[in-house]
Length: 360
Image (tube, rainbow, N blue to C red; front, side, top):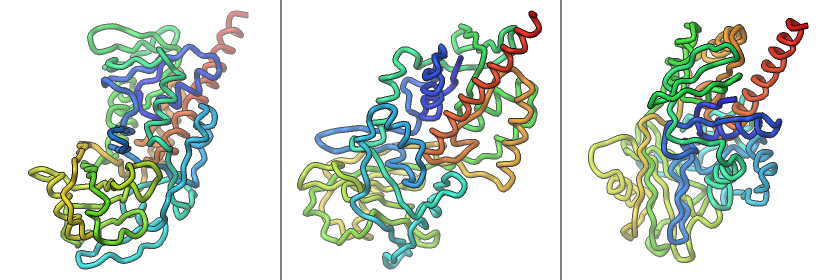
């Protein structure tokens, strides 16, 4: 079995496969696994480059955490509620409205008003636990350049010229990358995934001495109205939102900044000084640049994905999963990966039965 893509979707799919005793390889093109989950720890601070939590109403990542033995590391927020910066003042937002304004889409029917949860050591806790359990099954620097049918399933061509054979495949890739590989198999409908738009973004974490934040920070952060005129789209009060994000006497803020010329950390600090009354200079800052960030879907996305999966069922076992198809939330990605793994296993079992019957 092969899982293409080592983000949280692919790692969750591999965990599901490994649990059945399947021989699985995770092929990740980059130097590290985890995808958009990036947690750095320095001098008592926990710095998130990507998502800092997941929707509390979605159970999938919490179930996975308990299976991995890190259920005791789940934490609830220290504060609730968000504000809206309209260019003049901060006004209260209804629960769940901030997530909607930021394009955070959970699974269908999930109550976003229940807020978020996270892990004590940051979102990297779940990635680290998965990597520890999957071990050598995860192979980085292994970009898949093409997939072709073979006698027993698929032949995956890797950058550098090597080949991997697999009876079944889970593609846990960004939408545009999955579209290219699947369309090359003759499933032209896969091109619909190219309609999924990934917006660029920059996250900037800034560390301050606590007494440098003279304004009152209410709730977990703020989002900016489109007409507010600030390049800061949102700000999370990281060390006020979750426990253990900063050592005593210090604070950590995280700004989401629109792509711009110049130093995003300087821009973020200047804007936060204006909006929140920050007086002290940051002790340090850390920026993460995402050229393709949170995906957004067009109205017919779900129907297009359903049609593509219908066509994939005519091929040897191959499934698609991830934020580009089933929802951008971290828990939604876990659910997507595990469900794709189960479908591949079911199809492989059916294929093996057919072969046995043909042999009889």
